[in-house]
Length: 345
Image (cartoon, rainbow, N blue to C red; front, side):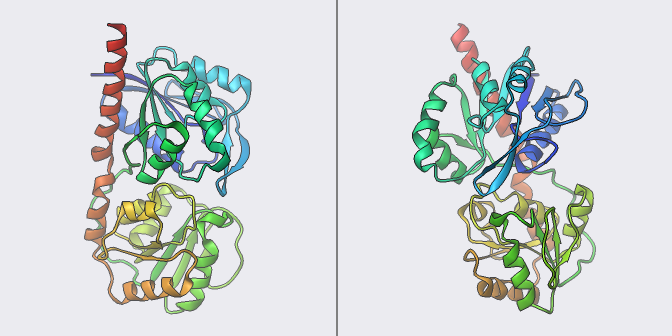
């Protein structure tokens, strides 16, 4: 069944992050299946038939990061108008202020939502429950067990876990630079743990440490390359021996681990539940307590002495390919369409 799908991303495409990358990847995969897809999101530039941009977002701090959201009334109005004719409206992070909540509220009888975030709602739990209750019935997805736990706390709904996905490249071939250790992420975002990576570089002088991502960082032994285009980032992952993910909190899914594994790169990561859910195979992954540089150094040295098989790492990422994850999203759309048909009938 061919569908007209509106994918609503609350975060500005001018500052791409994990959710925006997931939305754009899903849009591309759905089009290969013959569906007609429009992405609706904040962002500057010209809109097209496939991409409806709503203008620049406003920067709002949340959960140890900064979200760039479309919160102006005119953006909400234009987002609702962009849903016309859609068989399914798929809203990511539907409780966020601005266009996501506005679109979810307008998508009566055809709504699918994905919850990405993991956090302790605390005093926000009650107002978020009330906010959720105002939305129409929907089919709910969460990208991980951690995100599903948060979704249940703030909506009362048990979401189906459907993970994030990546475009899986061909199986890795060729030589790797043994001793090349990477960090991917914002350097000045506390939850990403770049200071731990920098401290690790001082403890393991026999390795080469390279950080890729925006933000300011100090000196030391780390080579800082700044933000790179996706193809250049992926080329570094295809060369590297190990990715270190020293993230500290607030992670709902380990997409950075999947991106590394997909290119044959082993991972050493903070022991976060969302990371363990992605990969828990000691042949390609090791874990250390958050902020524990000594334990991270022990894990890293063991991996450098005994390198992981790149093909085994690639195999560990296969269950997060779009060919595996995409049909699970399509199944959610089918449930939404069937529920709408039942209501009409």
